Length: 285
Length: 281
Picture 1 (cartoon, rainbow over the protein chains, first blue to last red):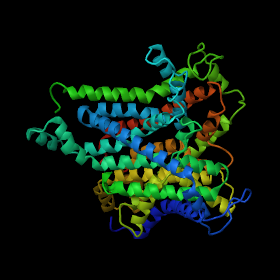
Picture 2: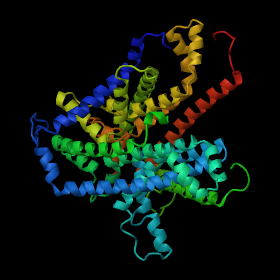
Picture 3: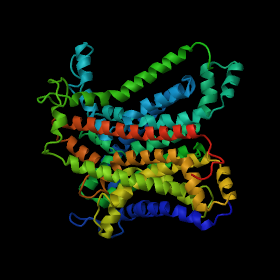
């Protein structure tokens, strides 16, 4: 391995470096630059160095509401996907006895992910709508007298959509961490007199932390930046940060969108830096 | 723990799992069911008769949306992204087995791309093209945007593969006089081939389903997910469900083909066993 020449290594890394230089590093730098630009209706990028866009972001009341609601989505979805993802990963890793069965159950979880995201979200409409299946069932069985209005085009619907889309991103890394736990540790815990719950609490959860951190990073990053789910399932009333940026972009207001994007980016970086302390991504593969 | 009767917790957890599966499949099955609406049926239940009307209707000229144009763009884009992802991730995977100048920075940039909110990446690529005065198209800026999303996954898979790869094979090849290229072509590549199928599959499906990063980088002609999102607010007939059913079926066929490819390679390997001492085929 040491005999081959180092330039081959650089050659092998060149395409990747180029792609990320042109389509990631420069564009992100571009967002930073554009956030200080000026704009007009027919001239969407006017080079300038103004803080107006940031002032607009921080002085608008709607900004704080939007951030509040996005953070609320983020925390709720994180808590639900973590609880659900951990439970399912635990079931697959420790209760399913054969590898074949594990693979089959895993595939069962992934198949719905081969349907287009948009279709998967639209699919909630006939279920949650005013005349949807769930309302029909609730009214039919007499649990409620009037169809529930808050099922669709509401914060509830958005959260259901997120949980539906992102739980798998929690299951996979946690399962991966759990499969690396030495089974003798569990036997030792049992032999030492630990109850099932104590084993989970003091052995499995600490050893699954890297997986939990990675899954959390995924879910938080995706929820913070999302605008599609909010668009389809939130109706016109609910705005997340991502949707706010997307709306500004649809009016071709690039500089204010870039300023919002910078603030969003900062927030995501802080959240993820906190989580990164629990996991070394590269070691987990 | 692998013997004897199941503990009670098993049944509790199994029910949680079952409920989760129902939750996952519920919407999808609803869509497929509603796609069979009768010709007068609407977007919601009840079913107004059962027919294949909406499956045929897709092939009629549509008043809203460019289904077939966006569909073929999505397929072509997916295929281009797939090939590039496999080649670039494989090459970079080889490079990353050694420390090289900037390897740490490059790795963190790739990870940053994975967790950067997609709308930010999309906005950046869009404004870069706008600023330079280059028109945005799905096969240039759109392609680049997709690669920033598929390559991190491809690279992470390659890391996982090469972490488990035994370098003794390569050393043996080199000791027997294989050149660097021959070692890769005849030793490394065949061993990691099934994982590359996995990378390809990831690349295609991530691209085919991408919407956030595409939104500002795609230019005037939409890909299928964007077209669907645009149609969703205007379409009032179950034709959109029929489309959902079709695309789901298509995805399942693609997955099926890939999985059977991997299974075939595995079987062939088991049958032939080690080919040590048989000479080069």
